[in-house]
Amino acid sequence: MDTGTDTGMDTGTVAELLAGVWSEVLDGVPVGPADNFFDLGGDSLLIIEAVALAREEGLEFTPLELIEYQTVAELAARIAGRGKATGVAAAVAAQGPGEFALTAAQERFCLAQPYPQYVTQSVLWCADGLDPARLGAALAAVLDHHDSFRLRLHHTPDGSRLRYADQVGFELERHDLSAEPADRRAAALLATTTRLQRSVDPVTGPLVRAALFDLGAGGQRLFVSAHHLAVDSASWRILRGDLTRSVRRLELGQPLDLPAATSSYGAWAEQLAQLPSADRTARQDSAALVSRATTATVRTDAEVTGTLLRRARSELGAGLDAVVVAAVAQVVARAGGVERVAVDIERHGRDTGPAEWLDISRTTGWFTRLQTVRLAADGAAPRTLVKSADQELHGAAAGFESAADATVLVNYLGRFTERAEELFGEATEAIGADRHPDNLLSHPVEVHAAVDGAHLVTVFSCAGTAPAASSAQALAAEYATLLTRLAAELRGEAS
Image 1 (cartoon, rainbow, N blue to C red):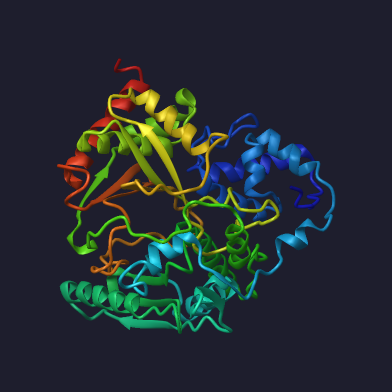
Image 2: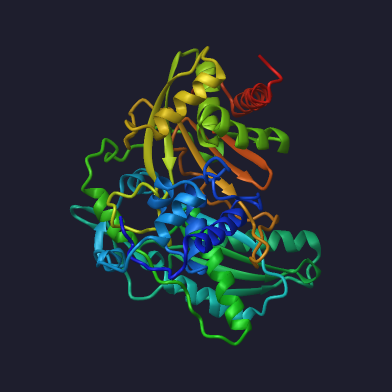
């Protein structure tokens, strides 16, 4: 694919800028011309950040190009040697349909729920020292820039569809809790965020609600909640960067100037619907209520996390996503007394679009696709299992479909980094739950994992009946042990 831009820079200048971009995205690691983005710990979600940051430096490339040209030198030569536009850029920016069918993942994880209106994603960010009026204006402009927030759910005799409304319908609430004692302040914040989550309406709108809280000496907190139909985990990375950019421009008295929009979510969904897929049927694999599920969290220490990030790639040729999938498969196999496990994987990368001409690197929306991997997990050596998982995930034969017998869902969200120039860091106060307590787990075992700073954080949620004799706590404990053993083996400390 040729995005058709001419940087006007020589290869050396492009390489120097690329190395700086990669270093910033990858937590400040030194980057040289021969370094490989993925060997340094990059993943499909960090590709999005790299593409966005590079565009601010005047460099244009697509996620697919970074996958094909993985070193600084290779990608720099590709960018510097490219010619002028040939019409592809116009196709990339083309608007999608005004109305379109929901994707299989949206049908399954949203409409199949008892309370489909209560399926949200939310963030609580520190916003200390920011002018509330500027912040409100910047947030309104950013949400208006991304058309996924204008989506509305439309029920027809032939099924549910999505279409675009004329307006986002957004307003920023402001709540002054500065005079409240700490306990009442926490209770008020929790109650208000829960109310906002429950007032998101995918049919009539709005799809997004937000509030700014003044906590007095505790600073300011910005809460944003959107229906899952409008966002996924990658969307929040895009939104945070856009919001930082917009607030800073307003502080300098400059007009808002957001980067050009990439292909619309509707265009992606329409192309996806044309692909043959086995996951078109909406179904719910678990009858377990969210409120009755058992949960456990594993916070892998920094040394083990760092070893797995660096050495799994260099020694096994596998990413951390494969490590997580392999470890989960093994503990589930042992708990259930089975040899093979089918695992549904939520894939979030903007690198595997349904059409090459689509550029969704700056598009917000729900881009989840389900992919099933089948692993002979019980008794397999950790190295062998990780390699098998990586081949299933990324090999030439990897396909996107969901198996009827998959009892496990793994959702690996990649690495979350907070760059120094961003204005909005993660806050720690408790907010409302994104899933209604009477909604259902999608699978008897759900596993959500991400690298948060220096730590791999993994959350297990389990129904009480499957796999047999398992609980979230038991699975999590064995999973933690497996990761520690694998890290020691990769360091040469175990046989």
